[in-house]
Image (tube, rainbow, N blue to C red):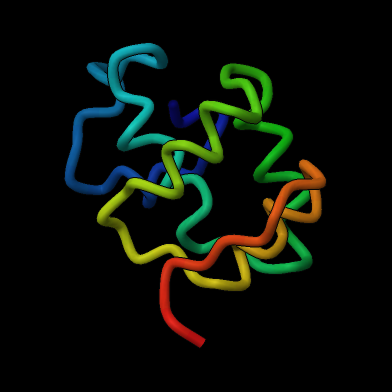
Length: 89
């Protein structure tokens, strides 16, 4: 994972033991947890190498991770879908 995303995103895990397929519920939210409007394109392209837009959206809608509404908005715009938010506005 560290060759795709910064090691600090997985500080509490052994990145060599993460499976792209099995651990998508961990990888997707963490890859976007610290994204900003400026870094979003780079971050989302890294995820899109391994996951479909449907997998990314579904994971973000159901995760318990603290994904910002700004990230949700950026995802909605990228995939041209109805906006969704993790926190009430």
